[in-house]
Image (cartoon, rainbow, N blue to C red; front, side, top):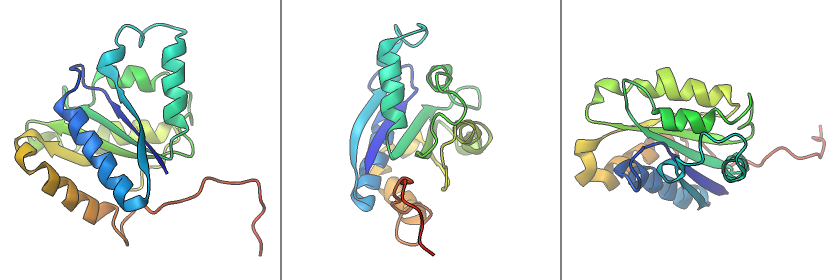
Length: 177
């Protein structure tokens, strides 16, 4: 299982990136995958608004070929950042078909926790990604408990009996009856 991390924090090497990477590593350990791609969009601000951009096309293709993608953003004005939206706008409808996505958002208060379900999840679904579990809303005051918060979320959402199980991509072989 190939796991990608995409972070739309405008600050490079942000805490949001650290949280998303920790979620990806925990998911990989449980599901038998590895983090093969980490996209810190703050490092691509010179390219993200260029059309066409070979660099951005390469990143979009790499994310779309992943099995699992952790899509993370800090909460800005009750939703994800424009930087993340700009990256995701480069995909056509169903451009993430066949990819399982885990939305992760960070913020100063749990008051905006619904931003995952009102903003980020619908966008990922529109792009064709499967979003079979609750996203993780991480309140930044929880940084000292990062490992415990993620472990608890993983137990509830990914552990055996949870909502995500390793799946194979569709093949050309017909199903037997």
